[in-house]
Image (cartoon, rainbow, N blue to C red):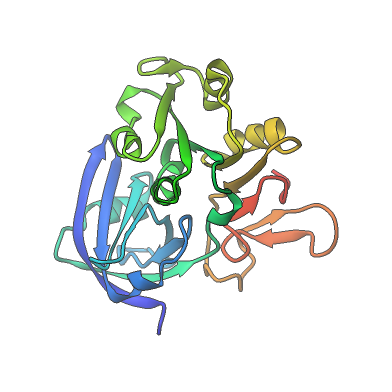
Length: 257
């Protein structure tokens, strides 16, 4: 089966200022096996040559649908925001390696840490871990109240805590400060968000906790051929890993941030 398909747009609506929820339908949804994988979408606006990568937020196998949440921040996503239900988008994927669910054993607790637009890939993971019977705690960080999204959706599958940098909603501060404030107890952490957040999480927990982080990088090919999205790793050769191929999910101490 080819990984490319012209998928039907079922929904493309703004759910927070500049944040859109896109639902696509197609046969290739049945290939989406792991939470944390991504797709590359062809955008046909003027001057848009390379596909844009988007994390998979939710997979609905019975309906052959999947969901993407994105922020409008450039020409590509600006073009995407103008797409309406009933149109079609060429989708390449699923791609990459997702979160390893079996890393969480029976009876263990998962801590999911999402920062801003890094939040979406954790939603499918929360749903799956909850379905396995594990306790799930989700900590989400945003700049302000207007930027908060999916708190209610995560609450269906987990205990949810929200931090905003300006204190306009939830805890005032960042996600690590909130975790410390609540003294949360967990066995395995899963995180996705800004690089500064992931680096702080790595520094805080890599020596004492099991965990996995999902990196967000600009990509060209999406299949590891161009080496345009590499990150550093320590130890033996090779010294770099491709976010699109070996990632986007890595063990907490696998790469150097």
